[in-house]
Length: 333
Image 1: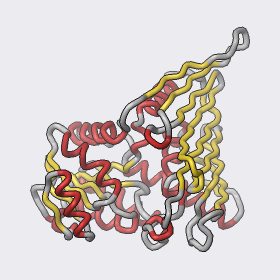
Image 2 (image 1 turned 180 degrees about the vertical axis):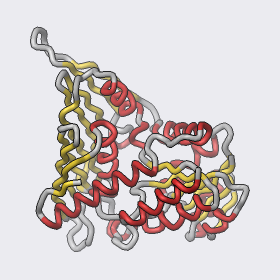
Image 3 (image 1 turned 60 degrees about the vertical axis):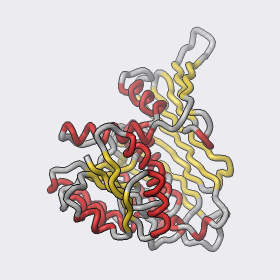
C-alpha cells in the first residue's frame, strides 16, 4: 500500500522510518508548505516531495494518508482524505474544536475506511502489558488513576506552533495531557465528571497554559487525577492504576523520559511488601506497534485501537475540562 505523509516536522520523522521499512507499505510522498523541510525529509527517507498537500489526496495511487501537521488543519485534511477513499492516521489532538472532530468522525463513518488517532502511548510495551494485567484482574477492580506527564520547555518555545492558539487546540493540558486522558478512558472507562485548573507559571505573556491539572470521575465510580506540565524541567512520565487488590505503575517512556518500567504490586498483609519490576530497554517501540495495529485494522476491516472515535471522546473530555476551569465548577459529561 502506498503512503503519503502530510507535514514534515517531528511526527513525520518519527513515523516515516516505520512506514518505509514496513513490509507491504511504500512511503511515496511527503508534503509540506515548508519546501526545504519537505525536500530534506524526502531525501532522508527516499521518496518524492511536494508543497501541495491536496495533490497527495488527489493521487489515486495513494492508499493511506498520515496527517502530521498542527491541529488547525487536521479536519480539512482528514475529511478530504477520507472522502477520497484513503485510510487516515491523524495525529492527536484530533482537531481544534469539538465540531471539527465530530465532522471528522462522521466522514469516517461514511467512508468505509479506517481512521486512527495518533495515541501511540497505548502501544508502549509497559502500557500494553499493564492493560492486559488490569483486564485479567491482576489488581482487582480499578478504583483510582494518577498520571504525571511533563516536559522541559525549550528555548524560544513561544515561537513554535504549539504556542499559537490559531494553530494549536490549546496549551499543554490538551497538547500533551490528552495522552493521559486517552489512557484513563482505556483503563477506567468513560468520564462522567471533570474539574480542572490551568495556569501560566513560566512562559508569562503567552496565551496558552504551560500547566494543567484535572480530576476525573468515571461511570464505574473510579476517580483519576492528572498533571500535564511544560515546566517539568526533567522529562517525566508516570501512570498509575490502583485496584482493590494491588497496583500497576508505568514509569518512563525511554530516551529522555528514562527507561520504561512496569511495576506490579499486590496487597499482602501476611508477608513483606514487594512488587515485580519489568524494564523495557532499547528504542521507542510505540511507533512501530501503533503502525502494526493500524495496518491490521485495515487488513481486517475493523475499527483500530485508538480510533477516530477515541480521538473524539478524548477531545470531549479535554474541552469539558477547559469549560470547568473557565466556569470554576465541575462539568458533567
